[in-house]
Length: 126
Image (cartoon, rainbow, N blue to C red; front, side, top):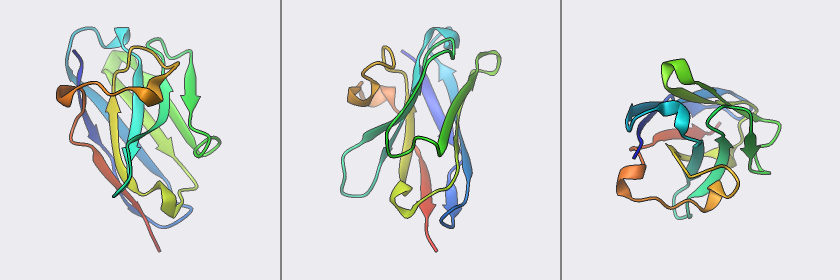
């Protein structure tokens, strides 16, 4: 099981940018795992944001972030990134990364308590 640590969140104004990082802490070969980014706003269910396949050739995005967010990975560094631009107040949430079986239905991934890190807070506000 892959264990991860999220970082890079913060507070930005609408239209601003942030780069989130997902680091593999343990779990074996990092390049065997697809990695998804998820977010959860207060009072709402966790939702899928983006996903990247193990080799980086396939990427998927939620409709709400297409054209604004870009997911990438560097397997040599055991890192996955989420570059977020043109941020909107509705992007405010705690962002998590995890390793779903694949990216086809990543938004439905539940995992278990050890599948998720502590998340990183993103706040978009004037």
